[in-house]
Length: 201
Image (cartoon, rainbow, N blue to C red; front, side, top):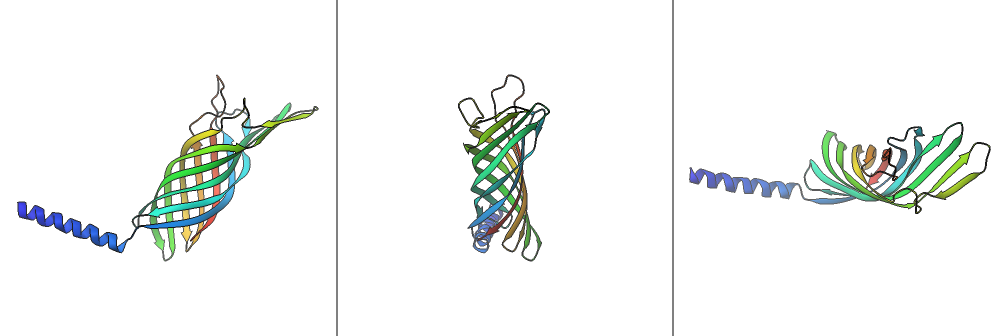
């Protein structure tokens, strides 16, 4: 029994070593860009706002199936209110870094489907909020001013990407966990859907 266990142990080590030789770890770089469709949760009469997302990504591939994805992106988000009395447009520009675990599934030659999920962090670096009362002058303030939207955001993201050779086409969804404003009632949080295209090197 003891000899069998020792033989199985060494066989396992040999198998893992061989697999590591056949599937070496690899760092892959990419560039991505696309369109954001963003809004705030619990926002009442808020409506979705169109923005952009652009940046560079890095993926640490350690098996044919599993990898870790990250990167740094400039992401434009926000929300808007359009009623009979007032129009408000909230523009937020974040510097965003995701940290996603990913699983890659073979579809056909040079084509894979990648599913990813994990947290992200973001920091607001720019943005203006414009309020216009119907029939009156408009007012514009810094979105991340002293009494404005919180700069720091943290949330969860999911994604699905089709890899066709080196071309990337994907959808990414994000839901923030930190409320944007210090209201006693509603606690609006960021919601975002990104339609992305990219290229990996």
